[in-house]
Image (cartoon, rainbow, N blue to C red; front, side, top):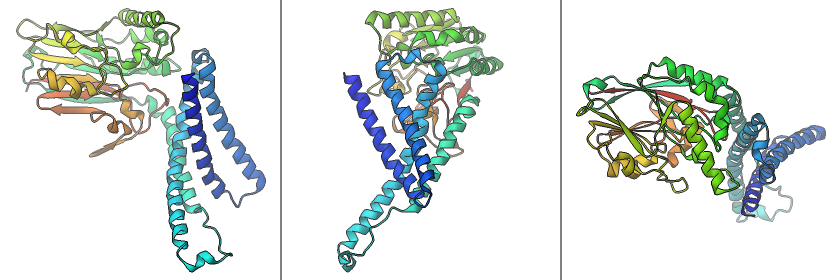
Length: 415
């Protein structure tokens, strides 16, 4: 029942957005012919009806019974159609504020007594401006689905770690994160990811979580591709918040637990070393490098805390350099820098850079920054580093605008 109430609330909110945004369409088309007006209105509300119907389908039917290509694109449609409408509303709100000020002012003038005075009409200029801006964003979303989502960018980062043993000087780490296999509709993008990763000639690969969206079966069709991801020391992996199945309605607690065991076995079958609050050491005694992996631990309220860094750290105390894989970057300031000052570098993902924003030299912005101060790229606190990978996959909106999918090459140096 609570789920139905939540969907009902969301539906009412989206309908309110539809109604308000439609005022801009009506204003711009006020001089158009009646048949053209009816056609545009029919298309506008038909798209809204289809999109909203999808929300209610999920309530009463099995979401995963739909073909994947329909699932992925219907979820993307919610973003593609409603974010531009919200932008239109911004312009309409400005227009309404202006109209309110004019109306309030007219109450104190003689003109307010004139019965022939016309009402203050909605500004056609602001309506047109809102439609132009939202139209631009709409086509950016379309382009982001077709092209940017698969325009993988290799980012090179040098980390200076003074305590790094000489035998690890120049160690090449390739970080991949947030594959979200349940969002892909073909193997080709995943093949491209693996091809790019293998071309980097990595000493070790770090996968920092979210192999799937909700259920382990999403990864099955990509196993024959992902198992080709190779490095000299293999692939080290951790779970992300989506890997636990917390966002899926399970028939029982046991079914959810079985799903997680199955995902563990998938990592094992891929030949990946899954780290669940554990560590292992590389190198000779006295010159060791510790690789530590934790389950998801978030410092943001609604995300889970499964990680136990104290447990994961045990046995790594005497390593010269300690590298941590932790999916959620809020873990860094929430616990790592506070309680584990000798962890040299943390590798995270999770944010995707919100899959929306811009990054130009000297200036970058994404909605992610309002929830995660460390949302993409390299950060430093005293002698500790954090690198937040922007992810190679996508979730919800099946594209990217301004934030390219990322494969990171981190080279460790001691001088």
